[in-house]
Amino acid sequence: MSNRKTTKYIEIWNRKLHIYIGLYLLLFLWLFFITGLVKNHPEWSFFHYWENRELSSSETPIQVPMDKDDLVKARNIMAQLHISGEITWTVVTPMEDQFNFRVAKPGKIIDIKANLREGHAKVEQIKLNTLGITNMLHTFNGISMNDPKESRDWFMTKILSFLMDAVCIGLIFLVLSGIYTWYNRSMKRIWGALVLGIAFLVCGFFVFGLGWMP
Image (cartoon, rainbow, N blue to C red; front, side, top):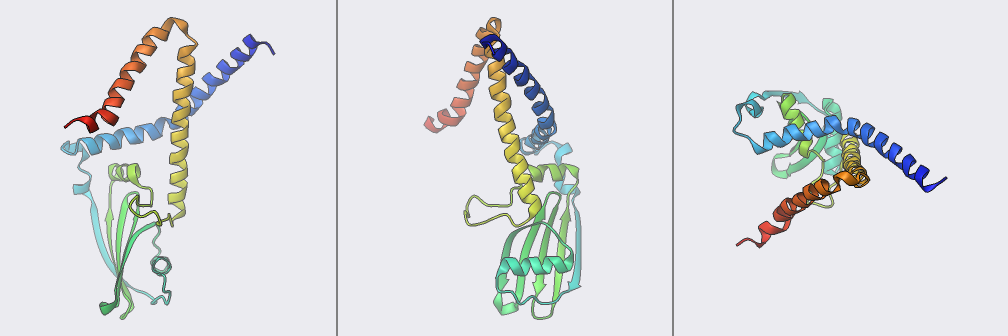
């Protein structure tokens, strides 16, 4: 295959992949676009999803789990209460035989307070609307950067984490394929280089420049 045919073949597949990967990432990008505005403009009344949350509370008898591991104990209680989600923290109060933990998933925050002496659990639930769900998805990863030993314990969190990695890889490809397409159009190289240079300056200022400011 000649160099010209090879180049043409690469250009065709680069264009196709750029289009279809872009279409796949479209809704993910809109998700981060909306939640980015929510976090950047909390004063906008349209974004006040927290005020519209639904609160509920119930108390249910449980079989006291004999597991010593807090995570296993929490999963046991969750199975009894038919609750799913990512366990974000657990707290044990030995003097009161109280075992408290929180379960989170996009759209719901559930606090469970289990009385291990009397065998019942109080479930307090916060339910968010669609805007609240998308806002939680922006940062929901199931682990804390402050605790490297922490791991994801809900399979849906693992799937979401995998999809976010795929989005990041897809964005990297879109950028590289866009640069390839721009570079192959000699008539537009100057304007493209100008825009790219401005982007480097602006991004570099916020990454490095702010740290140099007194």
